[in-house]
Image (cartoon, rainbow, N blue to C red; front, side, top):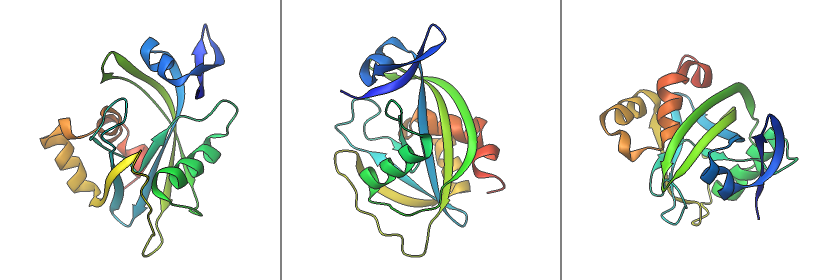
Length: 172
C-alpha cells in the first residue's frame, strides 16, 4: 500500500494513494522536466495506469512516499520510470492545482517542481508498467500541440504549460 502525504483537517497525514484521489484530498506531488536546450523529454503514460492512461505528460510525475524528501522522490521516480540516474536536479518552486483526472478521481496537488539538463545521448530504459513511449519535443511545439489537441495530454501538463510555464521553464 502506497502511503502518500495528504492534508486532512490542516494536518499532513499518511493516506493510501488511491483513497487520496477518490476523496480529492490535497496532497504532495513531485514533477520533473528533463531539458535539452529548447527541448523537453515527455512521456506517454502506460495504458494500464489507473488514471490518465495513454496521455502525454512531463518527463516524470509522482507522489512522495510518506517521510520521503521531494528531491529523493524525484530521483527515485526518474530511475524507476525511465532508467535515468545521476542528473543534477534544480528545484524551481512549488505549483498548486486541482484537476479531474477521470473515473471519479481528483488530483489536488501541491507540487515540488524540478528541472534537469540532459547530457548528450541520455540513456533511457522505460518501465513498461509506467511508460509506453517518450519523445523529445521543442517547448514551442509542445505548447502548440497542447493548444491544438489538449485531450492527448494530462490535465497537469496542460496546467503547467498554460499557467506556470515561466516559473517552470524560464525563458524557454
